[in-house]
Length: 404
Image: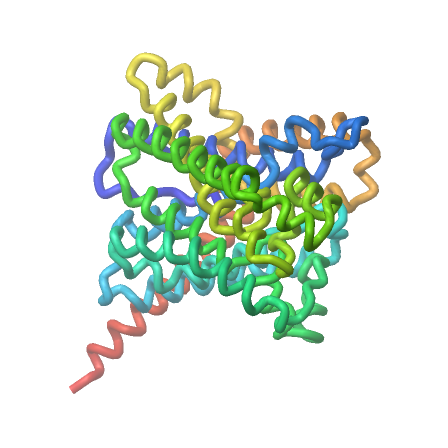
């Protein structure tokens, strides 16, 4: 969320690289805002065309870019064991700050907008062991998480507490901490454990040389191929191999069609193993995780390719600057969006209200970034994480000095 890279050396493309990353993040936030603000179905009852495009994919892109941002803050390399104290302290503090902000927004109506920040905080905690892995091990871990965690979830989710699907708040933290942890990690709309696959993908991408056009092209092509293969495999399993028929026989056509058309609430029913064959939005199945990882990677690769291109890069960066401004202030813009939707100020129609929010967000983000710099909430989280890392590092140094 608005995280800057600490590049080891300045390069002519450093700015454009950040523009591509921030612009991708901006698109993800605007997509999530659209899902909250607009009508998701048309007059016929079918999913709106824009909903079919952005729902699920926006939140997944948000999570993949969390991994990219963490890679930037850890110098785009495998963290050496000698730095475990400051890195761990920084990530824990970042998780606490984002989590507390998310819980503070828990008073809001989840029927209007499901707040992602508490789930996001758990992802920061899960990132701690990951940053110490090599890039190859991150790839293996991400693939294993995408395959194994949804399967285990399907097997054991029935014994876990039923999710409330309400926005997590301080009240839930006090009244039912274990239920809240279960929802944040496994049963909620943005379950952190299977979403660790997004985090692994983002960490791998963030360690690449994103200023290279060849790398950008590989991200675009590889991401698009992964998304297409996952969707094709789901279509094969559900169609010619009879998966949809098996699901209808168990849960009925209305349930199956509802999930396939409008998505799931973070997980699928546990009534049949065939549910693991769907790639429906927010289903957190292996094929959903692979498909949305692919679309997020392809989108990032496309924007990096455009903003890094020698001939059109300057124009692309100019055109993408509003998106990049929002992407640099995602935590602030997202939080303001949640507050606005639950306030008396939201007296607009669905489309007009969304357009007003986008216009205000662009104007504010561009002005703030131009005259101030890092967003207010981004600055606070980054400052706290930096202080925690510095204190942890100093404590280690003093311990060494005081040892005989």
